Length: 277
Length: 211
Image (cartoon, rainbow over all chains, first blue to last red; front, side, top):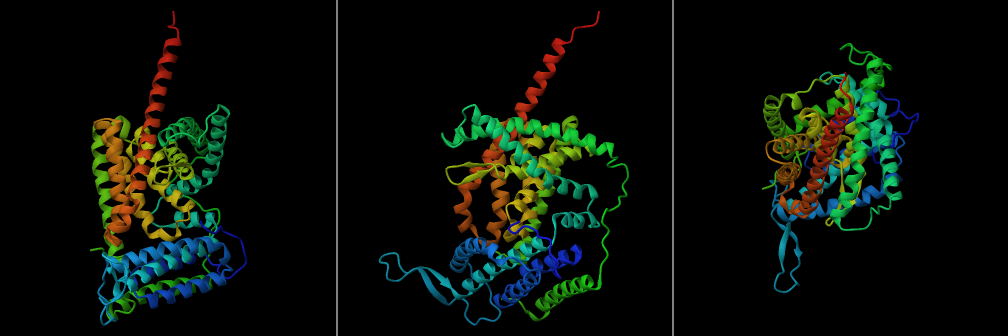
């Protein structure tokens, strides 16, 4: 996650993880189905308000926003130059806004016209990226990783073993990283320089480090299997949760608001073309 | 003509991801029936713990960076190839899918979150076809096929959504990254398999027959 979880006593932090999950899923789906930049901007503003309610640290997003701004600007220009959507509310979407290669460049100019319809569609794509980015970042900030696993485990069609695998694997990543650092130091002590040589040599050096890493991983997996079996893992298909959640009125409000908003946006788009470009 | 990043473009991409899974199941079924000892898996505690640790290796592999000619290459898919070649395609496909999820989650996947399930299906299919070709021919062909399939399956949905212009720019780094991951995963699996066999033979030679 771009912004790590912080335990705080904000109204959004206090919500049930399922309610927060419903909100983030609804926001993502709405951002996918809407193609009107005005509507997407409104959705973005609402997501930002939720972020403020959760005391989200916006300065931490500055670098990511700057990087994405460049990426989305490129996407917008490419969309504008290569794609022309059918626009519901625009009279003449094929009208040229400007040329990427301007008129004053001799021989090749003017070329690559940027059409109004494509440009608006590009802006809409950029807004989608920002809305999803903000929604997921806010969700990651107000929901602890263990709560995310609790959500996965509680999904009706997902086995609790899947939740266990995702949860345990995410906890083992730092352990594997430590092993990698040790192996890298061991290779360096033998005189291996990972930064020098051609690309093929660098790959060979890294591969030589990965053989003991995988061998260690297999031995670790066997030890873990023994530990799991000693605790009777997989004995029963029924399982209990260490932290049972209770939905409060505010949680239900968030769920109703998210699901209601999602259904309303789908209906309005299908019937009245609201949210469509 | 690109379908855009809206419901239509993403919907078609998800259908494509479903096709990857169907093809994976088809190839996996052939492997399981032809090589039952290697590719028929029982989902017991040991298998689950192996999937867990190897998915963690995939997640950590995303942070192993090799400076390449086009861009820096991360070894996030190597664990999937390794698991498919060493423990069979069901383990490999699961490790590849969960590893992709973890690698994206640790890399700050917020902005491309809707694409992550498609990548997961693409990687699961890629490692299965890779190990299928390795089994039927040799590792070199498997690396070539794995690279092509990985490139097509990962960039394909983007081509459908936003057109080929941006994807052509990403092609060299994608090809090199895919090839390195396939090569590393499959060679490490082969190295460990032969080390295991060699080790067993040595032990057998050192055990003196009872009188």
